[in-house]
Image (tube, rainbow, N blue to C red; front, side, top):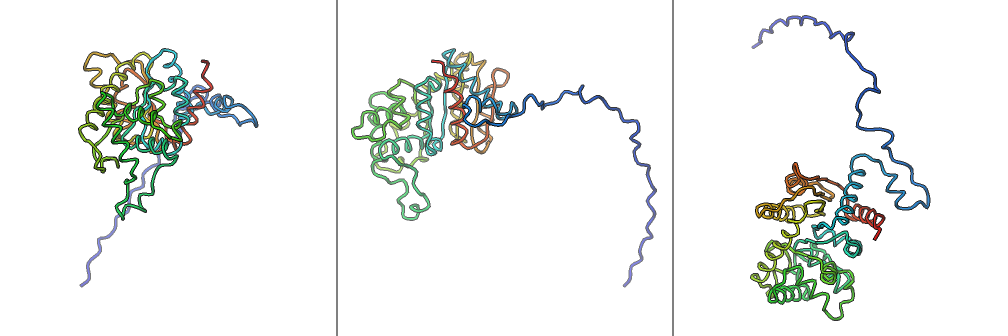
Length: 327
């Protein structure tokens, strides 16, 4: 069966838009976002780090990194809290010496970790190594079953809870006093205990390998971590007037904890204005940018998002701060 084709009708030609009447303006009169004065400069051989930092473009992330460094330096001058919330990856990529140096220089006045952070901090201090190959041992059920890690971390938490300490202080005190700890100098928590700096640990029960061990006392873990939340909230309550909160490598837990700390501090009447937050990570996520960078600072502070690997970005920031150290 053949079908009859509908005769195609010709499309009526339309006139192209006449561009002869387009209005223009002089290029020099336009406001532009990029100016040659902001361009980067070639690095000179044997030049100082200060010269290198100054040679970076004054555009986007490079300029924001300078602003964050300047905000931290300003906060130290004003004696405001400089809180570093760090995911465990920061410890795993070998940044403990830099973090401890900044603590000693006064560029970090409080530290907040997640539960995995105490595992890597403890193992580094005791064994000089950390971060197991999960794929290689998961099938045999050996993942997370290192004896010293499970037994001693849980013992430290129980002892600290008994003495009214938070979780971070419990681990820091234990490592600092532990005999034969070869790499104690690389423990962020031990350094915090030695320096009298608040170090808080915020735990989600079941997320950390030490929760699988029979020595885990969930009551002690919960009490100690809740005390740490209150200690962190007290530091957050003092951020106004030049304080800084940096979220480095925590995608979910610490941004949520920070948002609640801000909420309870403001609920109790603490005015948190004129402060800076920043999120450092190699992938920008919803919670850090919403709960750290955006919501808490809206209309009252400044928030920045800086993308890059921790093992590159944090040494850059640390070096800028050391160069700014006049103390």
